[in-house]
Length: 178
Image (cartoon, rainbow, N blue to C red; front, side):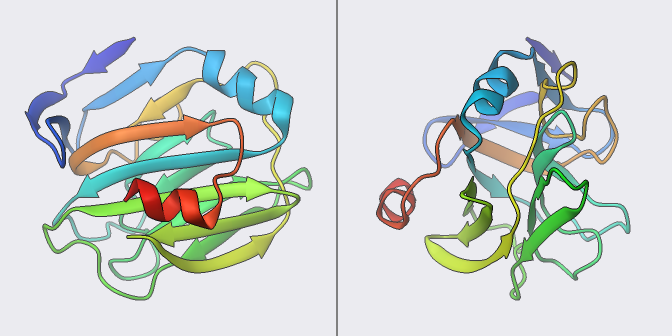
């Protein structure tokens, strides 16, 4: 574990981690990425609170090896979120919100991938889906929370209750967790 420049603060339940948008991130080893690679499906989930504006390159909530992850806010869609699972073809698939999420309130974000379909949910509501599954090449499966793979695109705000599953949660499970 590497907790670089993060600060414990109030979370949506109990404590959360505050990220400064400049250098703060959490890094874990390959174990989680290895577990996901063996199933071919995944769920990324977490609570976030931010007032940060889009910066043109994005602010990463979490990523595994740079191949799957969630941006908050999205770099190209004004104050929206984006989930992505890179497919076997190398194409990046995205689903986005339409409403601002950088309002300083807590939001629950879930991205799932199963049977070549990526789905994105915000606060229990289904936002959309894109076709194509994902792959995680060996050697690049570390989990980064609050930044992209090996730093950069630093998240600014507070994150809490981050969870990663080696299966896609159902709609009912997504709604129960928010």
